[in-house]
Image 1 (cartoon, rainbow over the protein chains, first blue to last red):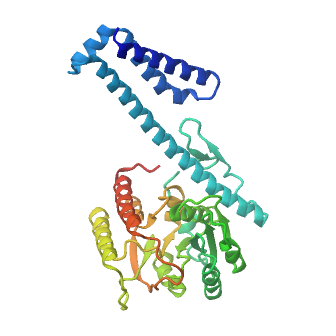
Image 2: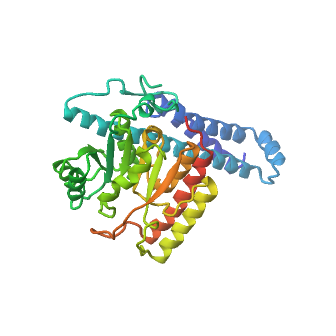
Image 3: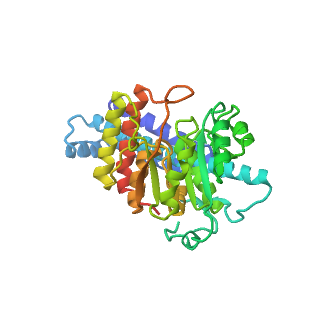
Length: 136
Length: 246
């Protein structure tokens, strides 16, 4: 085993353990852990199975197999960051909708008559998108 | 959402149309009261001021002048604030909505002129243009460049022959109120709106309006913001061309 192999085994095993522990303690939601887990498992497997790594990096045209590990790691970080950008956009959308509903609600409360009984927003748990009961 | 035209908007011809004047405002406590009371004095329309999260006296000044006020708990940008007004108009059955700026650049007396094509059913949207009038409107060189670029962008992509693509003085009918209450850009919505209208096959016309130099403060468009504005608007313009609405 080369030093880089030992290092990547240790790091990916620690990462795997840490992510699982965070999920177990409900500090990290399952859906946000999937990419982390997949990434660390793949790096761990390739670190342990040197011949798999050599085969794969050969196929990819990379002469120094451990650098293939870096490539995988970077690709996963890229994926995770894109995932975050999407999540932030979704949260922004929900936040905007919530602010608008709140402004409208504050007004209808202050005027005393609620003219919109059927417009209590609900969140679709799949997409995180608000839906208005009664209008869909 | 359903795209079907609301029945009551079409079958409402005999009745006086209900019009809502919408003013998105952020930190405009000095000018907002005068504009609201001027509208209330001259026109039989409701006025809604959407306070976009500002903590000064904007909301109180607007309310004292006779406006309905909607207070957003955080700053959403002009488009996000305006969308709240569309939602209000949708929920309270208004037939048309006019947007006018809070900073006194638009002439309150031009409101009926902007509304006219919409109320007569000739157009789904009518946009006030400062370049159609007889008065020369002086603008800086970079602005001319920006306006020419957006004119070309809009015309090339939608076929609307606009003269003032960034105008924030316009009226829309019930159909667009309902559409915009679901889909509207959060900031810099004016140019984007042309693609949205095009996608909705809306009829849009321009009408001449007067426009004044700003009375309070300077324009918010600095060099950096201008570049960001061009890039952001162009991007979301093209995205809205290929986006699905439903």
